[in-house]
Image (tube, rainbow, N blue to C red; front, side, top):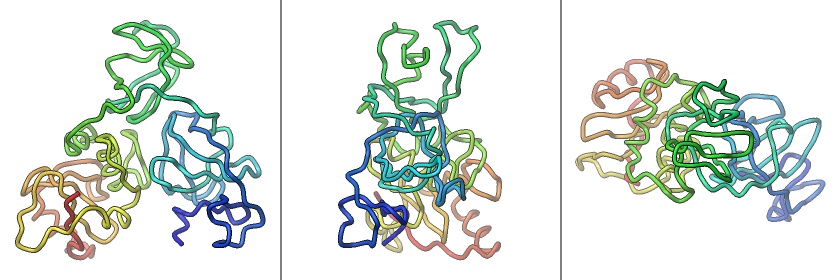
Length: 272
């Protein structure tokens, strides 16, 4: 089983895995949410980052141990460790941040000093406000930066283009730093389409575009360990370690550069 998608900490597992893993304890799990704007989901407690998760994302806590929590994320089933303080109770979100980033303010006033930066995709429970300001736990957010839960974009490429110029960050999932698979996952999730978090998983999505068939906007192109989204039949948008940011470039130029750097040829072309 893929440890990234297996809710088993090495000691404790969800009941669904009974008979499949040798856990000391099986639990139903504790429903919660991410309680901070942005958190690293790690392979081991305090260890290497696999992905990032954002405020309000639903999760199930499998185990709490030594100040850390082993969780499974609701959006894609990804499992890993968060600092225990980054896990909060279940929140029934009503809205989500649908711009590259916004801020949480202590009062509905643009001159107020911001309390926190909120990333794209953060989920919030709006309890009041007006056409300009949405009142949420801890303060106020510009209402024009939010969409209601279920109000999705329709074009993954347009979503990805919101991140143009964002710095590259391995395992990143926000405009503060994002990687190739984080960009693609965020683009499809924002369009209401379930999508896994890593490029090897994403390469199984949709259907293969046969050789000789022209690529089109929204198609995915894969190399070993890398994925890009087609902007049109000739250009891609991707977060890449060459330019260390999100940018648009010609597919043919990218293919030649990646091959010359030892990254190999395109391994798959998928239409989702």
